[in-house]
Length: 168
Image (cartoon, rainbow, N blue to C red; front, side, top):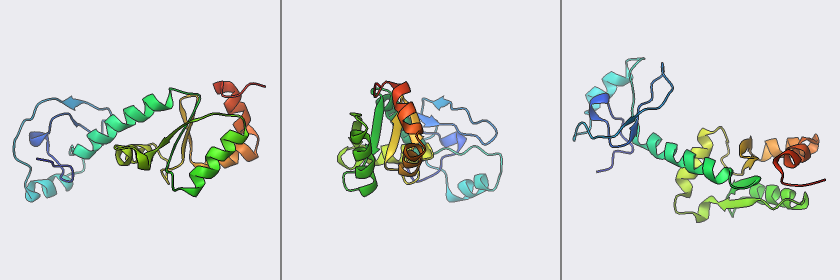
């Protein structure tokens, strides 16, 4: 039974759910199912009315694992671009890197079976719109606007050299 759209209370955590607290932003896992029934709408509303309550999202745990996957993919090559094949800005950014002599790793999210979850994870990193998302040297640089700004002020080339993507 999938509760991906329902909030879970502490007493009804789901397998591998994340414990996210406003007062404690660290993550901790609850490996066992502690309740087989989802919370009632009354208990959910009661929890939402308490500012220090813990709220559990199944979706957040999926996004957390996808964020880990994105981080692993981003560290595999000097330049990594997450894009969509139909996105004109993604095409422009890929072309910019090719013209700089860079051969980036490109992951087309619309062609990946878990692409939507990866897109959500990228959005959680602060990339809005979610594509293109550019990583240089394993670090998140930003979307098209950020990359174009870096290119126009001359900072992009230095980042690429430092990451080992180009040699001059």
